[in-house]
Figure 1: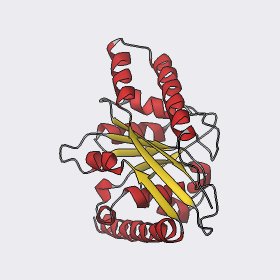
Figure 2: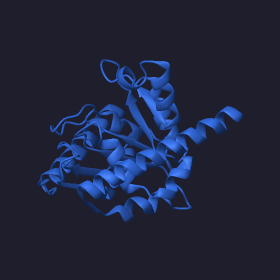
Figure 3: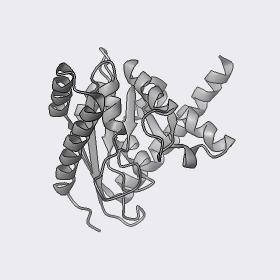
Figure 4: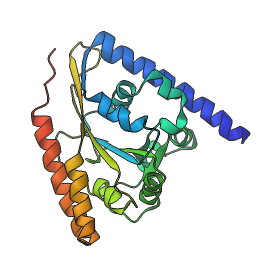
Length: 236
């Protein structure tokens, strides 16, 4: 109990530091445009809490810090249960005891990215978090890339969860430019109710898991690509 309390204190300190630094960089040095954040906050702060899964395109190593600091309120940093669980590459974030400690207390789940597939402990743990009505965030491209080719883990989490989670897509632009040079950063949030309805239909028809995962991935890939094409570009 004492150790968990200490870990929670360290977590809050890290969240606050990340929130303050990222907010300063994105809102004081750069120009931030964020749309539809109320949609996300509605589900995060909803008293009748249901599971939430968010996913975003992956432009840089700063994506996580910038996105989370700007979609969350400062008060959220003090509430560990409101913070997201996210999938993190085991070969990058869990390579030694110190990195593993910081990744663990900030709610990162270790994932083996290549040649393993869905059948691994990290994916099962992420499904358990959704079944517990918690929030899971994922970068389904798997790597930093401008190519909108999604890996199938996102669809796997959605389809195998006991209840279909609320699905929110976050698209952004401007994070692939140096943050110390003033430019525009845009973050757009979209609740994918049509995907939720589609998953409901697939489950009602008892669609085999592998086929359903392929269909869901293709649908979300198309939606994300279209949204990013229409995303405002950064200007220096």
